[in-house]
Image 1 (cartoon, rainbow, N blue to C red):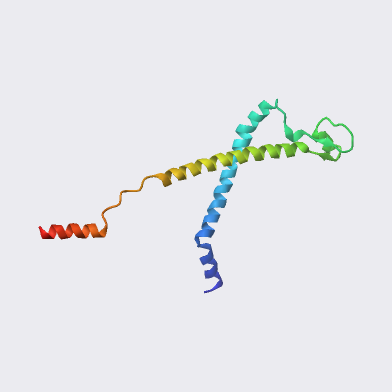
Image 2 (image 1 turned 30 degrees about the vertical axis):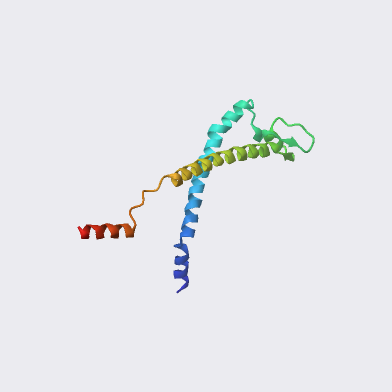
Length: 138
C-alpha cells in the first residue's frame, strides 16, 4: 500500500472520525456555553454584585492613582489587572457547573435507556423442535 492509501485508511478509522466529530460539536457547544455565561448568567451576577465589572479592576504598580484601567494603560503604568483573574474564575465555575448539569442529564438518560426492559425472549430452539414434533404426531 502506498502512502496516500495508508493515510486514507487511517482517516477512515472510526476513532479519527469520532474525534473530529467531537471537536466540531465541542466547538459549537463552547459557543452555546459562552453565550449562556455572557448573555444570561453574567448580567445576573452583575446585578447581584451591584453592577461591578471585574475586568476593570486593577492595581497600579507605580504607586500613582488612575481614574480607570484605560487611563493607567494610556499613561504607560505597569498594572496588575486582578479583575481579569476574578472574571476568569467566575466564568470557569459557571461553565464547569453548566457542563456538569448537561453531563449529569445525559448520564440519567443513558441509565433510563439501559434500564428499559428487554423484549421477552422467544421459545428456544429445543422448544420449537418439540412443538413441531408434537404437531407432526397429530
